[in-house]
Length: 489
Image (cartoon, rainbow, N blue to C red; front, side):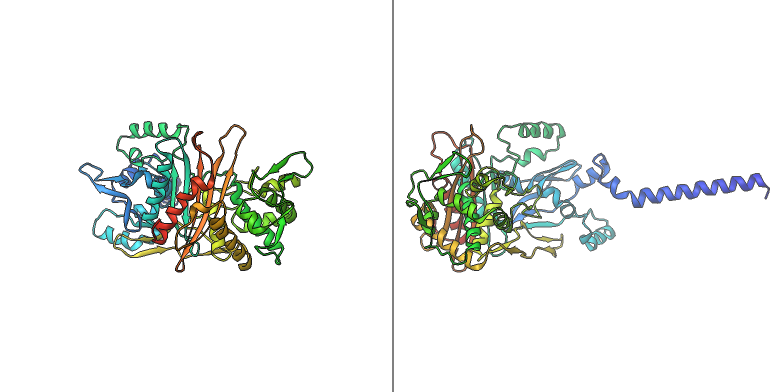
C-alpha cells in the first residue's frame, strides 16, 4: 500500500473512531440530559400519553389519569381539587409541580425501582404504566380541616393553614392551605389557556399557589411559649407545674424604656405559678424566662424541636422555621413570646406540640406512606424515624399537664372534647405595624392510646372579627382532633 492510500485510510479510521465515540457519548453519557430537556417534544408527548399512576389519600384517588378519546389517550384530573391542590400540584405538557414533580419518575413509570415492570412492558410491547403513590393523609381529617377553614373564610379573604400529625410516627394526617386553587385548570390540553390561568393565579394578591402550611413563616406568637417553657424546665429540673416563676403586670425590656404587659390577664403581683402563667399566657413570665435561660440554651431547645432545619424531606417546597441569634437581652426576651425575628410554619408548630405529646420525642414528619407498582407490589414504604429528643420525658410530662390545664381552665378552652385528654395553647402575633394581627392555635389530643397534634394559623381576618387564637383556631382544631380520634365533635 503506497503512502497516500495509507494516510487516507488512517484518517478515515480516525474519523470512524471519533464518530463512534461521539455516538456513544450522545446515546449513553448524555442520554439522560437529552431525555430531561424541557424542549424534547418526543419525550414530553410520550409522557403525556402514558397512563400515569394515581396519588391517593387512603383509598381516595386525588390525582388520576382518565382515558380520553384523543391522541394522548389519558387526561390528568384532580377529583378533589381545592382540598388537595397544595399537595398534588398539577401535571401538564412538559411541566409538573409539588408531588406530581417530586414523585414524577415513579408516577410516570420511569424509576429504576420499576425495572421488572419496565422489562415486562418492553417484552409485551405495552406502554409503561406508572406507580401509585399513597399518602399518609387521612381523607376524613383532610376534609374536616378544609371545611372548617373554608367556613371561617366564608368566601372572604381569610388566609390560613391547618396541619395535623400523628405524634408517635410523624405521619401527616392533614395539610390544608387557603386560599386554594383548581389544578384541573392547569392540566388542560390547551397550553395557551394553561399559561393564562397560571398567570392569573401567580399574580393574585392572596397568593393561592403558596402552601401556607409549609412555605409561610410568621412569628408564632404565644404558641412559642411552649418552647420557652421547655428550655426553662430543661435548665431547671426541680421546677414543677406548681412552682413560682416571674409574673407581674408588665415587664420592661432590658436596656430599653419599652414595657410589655399582659393584656389584663391575672399574672400575679411579682410571681405566679407556672400553671397559671401558661393558662393565662402571661407575657411577663415568658419574657423573663427567655432571658433567664439565655441565648445558647434557647437556641438549643428551639433547634431540638426542629427550628433552623428543613422540616420534611418528601414534600417539595417546605421551608425551615427560624430561631434567630438575638443581639441583646431585649431581643432575647421578645423571642421568648414568639415575636420579632422568630419565624415558624404551621408544620413546625405541629411538630412542637406533637413532640410534647410524644413524651419529648420528635418524629420526622412524612407525607408519602408507600409506593405501589402497576401490578400492586409495594416498591417503597416509609418507616417512622426519630429526629431526636426535643425534651426529656419529665419536661414533656410537665408541659402536657400545663397544656391540659390551659384547655380545662385557661385560654384554650375552645378545644375541649368530652371524654378526650386535650392540651392546647393560643397565640396572636403581628408581622408589621400596619398588618392585622393573626391567630395561632396548637393542640394535642389523646384517647385510648391514639394521639393527634394540630396547628392552625389564620391571616387576613376581617376587621369586624375579634382576633383570638382560641376563638378562631380552637374550634377548627377541636373538629380536626375529634375526626382524627373518631369521636363526636
